Length: 297
Length: 235
Image (cartoon, rainbow over all chains, first blue to last red; front, side, top):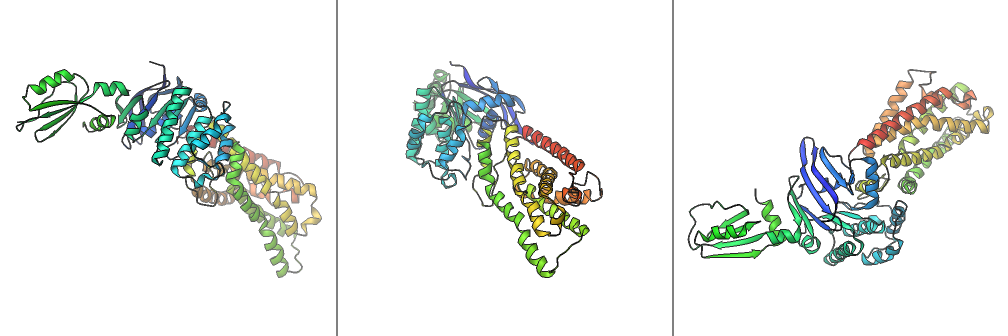
C-alpha cells in the first residue's frame, strides 16, 4: 500500500463541549480516490477544516504529506500542495472568472497555464463572467479548475458535485478519474451521492458521530460484505442471536435480511439450522453498506 | 495580488470616503459665507473649527479599516462574500501576511483620502491662509494621518472578530469614547484629537511629536493584538 497522504490519529474536535469529531482515524493512500461518507453533521466538513488548518484539533493529530496541519508554517506548505473545493463554493463575487485565475496564479510556482484553456472548455466556464453571476455548480467547477491549474498533488473536495446537472457531474467525475490516473493526484472527497462515490472511488471511509465506523478499499469492502435473505415458512418465535460477523439485521414478517461483513459460511450454516424455506446470498452495493452501518444503532 | 484583491474590495469605499471628505467644502463655503458675508473667525474660533474637522475626518480611517482577513463587503449585498474566506485561507499565504497586506492597503487608502483635509480646511477657513504655508499643509496632512492611524488600527482590531456592521458601530462608539477620554487630558500627548486640531502644525508650525508617537504606539499595540487574534482564531 502506498504511503498515506492524509493521516489522522484519534482526531478530536470539540465545540462548546460537544465533540464534532471524536477520535477519527484516517489513512488516505497516495494516488487514491477516497470517498469520505457520512450523514449531515457527521464531521466531514470539520475534518476537512482541520486538514486545511482552519481549525485546531482538541486532541489527536492530523497530518497531510506527513506535515502537521496544526503547525502554521507546515500549513503553508500543505496549502501550496492542496487544492480545495469548499462546502459553500464561495469565491470573491466581485471578480470575473479570468480575474480570479490571474489572482490565484500569483501564489503558485507550478501554475499550469497549458491546462487553462482546456479546463475552461471542459467545465464550460465563461472567462468574462462575474463570479456573482455563477451558479453553485459553476463555482464548484471553477474551484476545481483553480485546484487543477495550481498543480495540486492532493484535491480535498467537499461535496464537489453538489448543484451540478447530470452532464456536468459526469464531466467532473471523468476529470477526477483522469487526474488520479494520469497525474497521480490523490482525490479526497466527501459526498452524499453514494452512486458517484461507488463509480469513481477506490477507497472509502464512512463516519458517524465524529468517528470512523468502517473504511478501506472499496473492492475489499464489497468483497467482504454480503447480503443474506432468509425466508421462513413460519413465524419466528423471537429474535435470533447471530454469530459474529452480522452487522445489521432487518426482519419483516417471515423474511430476515442480514448484512454480513465476515464469517459468511458460519452465518449461512446458522441460518440453515433454523430450517428456513430458502437462504439466498447477494453482493452488496456501497449504498447498502452505508445505510446498514448507519442504521445499526 | 493580495493588494489587487484588497483594492477591488475597497474601491467603492474609497470613492465614498472621497465624497465624504469633500462634502464639507461646498457646505461650509456656501452656507457660512451666505450667513456671514464677512466670515472672519478669530484664531481661537479657527482652532475649535479645525478640531471639529479633525473629528469629522477621523471617521475616514475607521470606515476604511481593513476587514481583517475576511473578504471586505462593499455597499451592495453580495452573496457568498463571507464564505470566500475559506478560499483565502486555502492559499499558501500566512495569516500574518493576509492581515498586514490588507491593513497596509487600507491605511494607504485612508492617507490618500485624508490629503483632502488640509485643502478643505484651507478653502473653508480663508483667514487661516494668511498663517499657513504649503509645507505646513503637508505637515498637517502627515500629522493627521499618523494620529488617525490609532483610530484606523482600532477598526482593524475590531474587524478581526466582528462583522462589518458591528465593526462600524463599535468603532464609532469607540471614537466618541476616545474623544471623551482624551478631552480629560488637554494639552497632553494622550489627546490625539487635540493634536489633530488646535495643536496641529496649522497653528503651532511644528509637528505634535509626542501625540504622533503616542498614536503610533497605540496603533502598534492594536495591530499586534489584531495579529494575535488572527493567528489564533479558528474559522
